[in-house]
Length: 307
Image (cartoon, rainbow, N blue to C red; front, side, top):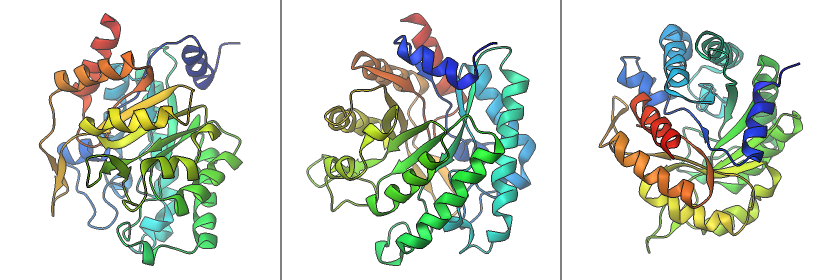
């Protein structure tokens, strides 16, 4: 019997290989003409632009990605309920996984490509901790999310943009309870002194976040949704807490509202140069999120192949 896609990824990591993730999904949907929802960003596009979403996943696989992430980052109930889309929760999340699995089947060409279900603690009130849900309500929402992703057939769960310990802890516990492999991605922004601090909790140090949500609970941990220039400093802090395979999944640029357009994005060559440095520092999993598209993943694939 051949290995499952996830088993193949795990074997490659154990052998010291570099694994290539995909690029941004929401920003790529917007760039190709999908309408972004005012409240839930790219979540609604799963139902309104399913063919386009599947094509984007396929393009990342053909660019060389061994992992594609289903478009579920912004589709937890923390996002959907306030927008009046709670009734679409199951349809959006199941369809997002279905489209990613279809893309894998259509584009992988026999290569082992794993499909990850994304879990975040993103919410419309993300910048107002006082309006965050109660711990009990958050745990209920995250358990539903994790169980839905597992039932839909993802190979593993990736925790994206973990930055608020109060929400990251129940989210991670829910993902681990499924029994699926779970990777953790922490998110940072630049503090007043230039140091990395948790994206949603600038009152904490980045080390405080890692201490509160230990990366040792996962086989792979890394820095996600963090600007390219801040990724190395954040990884340096992470290495003080974790000696397993590390991941770099940066973003570049910023949103220009009200259209959710992402602008001021670095070139594919610049991303590949930065990623080469991260790999030299020991990173084994690389990709890109907001703003970084198919051409960036192609550049990463070429850089990895040339090493």
